[in-house]
Length: 59
Image (cartoon, rainbow, N blue to C red; front, top):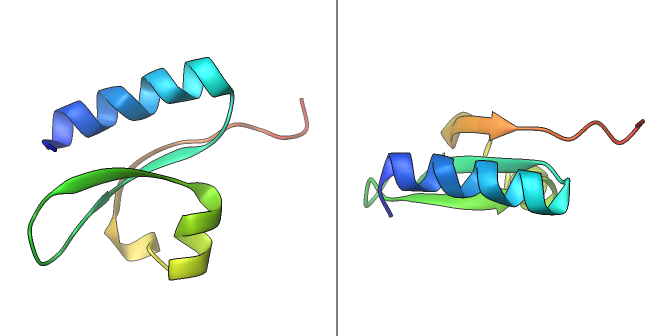
């Protein structure tokens, strides 16, 4: 998916689900995808994150 579409999708999912979402770029294909926090941590995707919207669990 395109970068802007992935960012818009992450924002919508954040509003609907009240969870953290990240947009990561696939370095091989230059495609973007939306992932949740556990996947970012498990697969160590921090260097590929181009946008994040994070939910504070303390609220």
